[in-house]
Image (cartoon, rainbow, N blue to C red; front, side):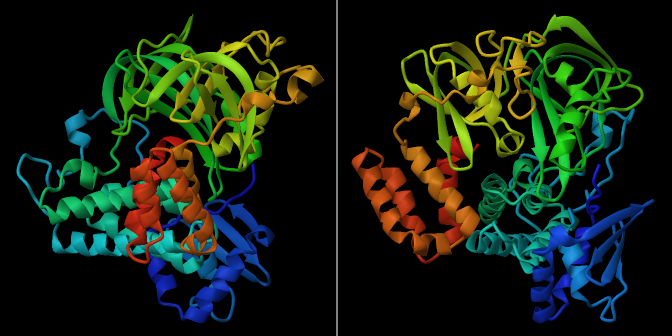
Length: 509
């Protein structure tokens, strides 16, 4: 497994902020050459060679350099800005404490009375607002060291003042700058500001601190799907989602420093649930009984030694699905190429044409092999599990998976045809797979463009934006047209972009 940068304390951002602008710009140039860095691990230490300089990292808070300008050097700044953010609270592998003993202190607004923010919390929120505004304006494609340092400092301030939801979403944005993480962070900041101004801050607005695992007794869970994970900060693995009889989702993951080649290994090795040796590939399709189960506040299953787990011989058969997840049965039409991805096109029960695409991480892992194999059999009836427009799982059918009867459900990016005929994989999609663009797709396109390229995307695409506004009005979507038209206004880009991103969220995923 390749060596990656370790997670660091976000408080180190202050050391970047103290540097002269010329060194920060130099650090940005060094991060652009990150593929040339040599990273070696020795025990708890990581050595990063950048040109003739060597940066030594002892996580979570020690970063040294052997160059003459150290510690005020661009090499340290480049490594700090490129490293993932360390968790605010260490995650305990198991605990026997009761749930109420592991909960964080009640945040403002946790009771029935209305409340606002403290002075320090408001200052942290102001900095977070400025930070997300800077990212929206600059775009996520090439975040400079200055922007990444601002994100780290915003996380540090939010954590220290108890703004846990803001801290968590900013941490995710730092780790994986994308339209969805930018939307989530911007929404968390916007909702907290709105609640604070109205003196009605709730637990949802503030969030809760990451807590230790609490004992949840016995759980009967059905596997739903397994997703690959690949982050820009150098983490790779899989996350399996399961559900109980009420549709409550639970997850178990194996995510470690790594690259795309490490994902299949994580998928085919034991998930580490107690004494159960079942792999993610097995538990994502099976029915499982857990005793002495431990669960975090976010629904993540603990993997401590006291957990006992058994996997039923019966396949997964969930009674309910989590909110936002549905099963759709339809006939295959073909595949439709999209920007950087490919969509599976079906005709739904009502005759409506539907398009579902794998997540970006799945596409990096050759999910197109699955899409092509299915799309080469137009007219075949398939059942898919989807979240919005994202394809999570496909029920296997012998017509397009003839040589593999090991499982019923297939997961994009993780399962590939075991021995497909060349025609099955390479057959082109039916020409009829192209479907008309929907109003939400138009909004999603602009939400993505601005998230990636920032404000310049609007000036460069002014003519296209005007055409899209006119198209939306002509297709009975005046509200969406107004949202898109306001996006080009010169003020309050962050709030206007968020409105477009939320309206297009079913297409963004």
